[in-house]
Image 1 (cartoon, helix red, strand yellow):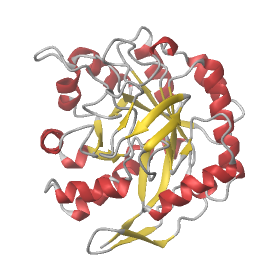
Image 2 (cartoon, rainbow, N blue to C red; image 1 turned 180 degrees about the vertical axis):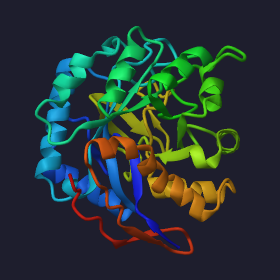
Image 3 (cartoon, rainbow, N blue to C red; image 1 turned 60 degrees about the vertical axis):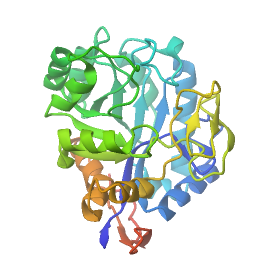
Length: 337
């Protein structure tokens, strides 16, 4: 089987490298991107999570400088994903994001973070129930950004209004939620029911059990589903302790990345090619469909935004073995802008 290369919309780090590190260098970034290429990923949006404005400025400046100065960044990184700080700070919703750093959507902050960057912030994840969110979604959609929901309690009415304003993605459907939700008018059902939202899913078996994943894909429709890794620094590394976005995390022998308390998840150690194999192994999707959910589908989700910014992606090409191990058969060309 030959497919275009995989594309990860949500990747916070990889191979021992944290993309949220203000000391990130071009060499370290190349190490992570080379590991991703080995796993069939030919493009990605490095993702920054919630932090204070000063921390975000330092982190995105370091990330952009690393991309500019790296060997693989110009081939693989068209822009960035900002997941927060405009999220729901309530218990159960904020996940591993620091709740104290969360705020209402701030157009000036995003403009300030992007000023001077070589690449745009292409994807913004927020909670549409926060004050001012709908106006911010309209503004950012008009600027050509892709808008997504996560770490949110938005109900049916709020999500309809957000989709009307330009929201088009669920960042990691089924996660960033408390264990107890309203019986029927809850954000999980509302996101599933909204046809204008494509669903990004973390298929590692820890964020969503396989049977629940099967149900979510069946309800949303495979053609509206996207595989993401939500990988952090521990992806592709042995079990042990790591630092992610200034916090300690632990990769357990079972493959879970947990917060210091040992309970809540803190991203994943998932490789995107393993997500493809998981869907096939769990009899959720055939190989071609699973690979499309990790390749052509995420690129399609960004198409309007890429066109607006004049960015052309070359996906490269991947050849899959009978065991669904990818081998890069054609490298992507330098991104055209």
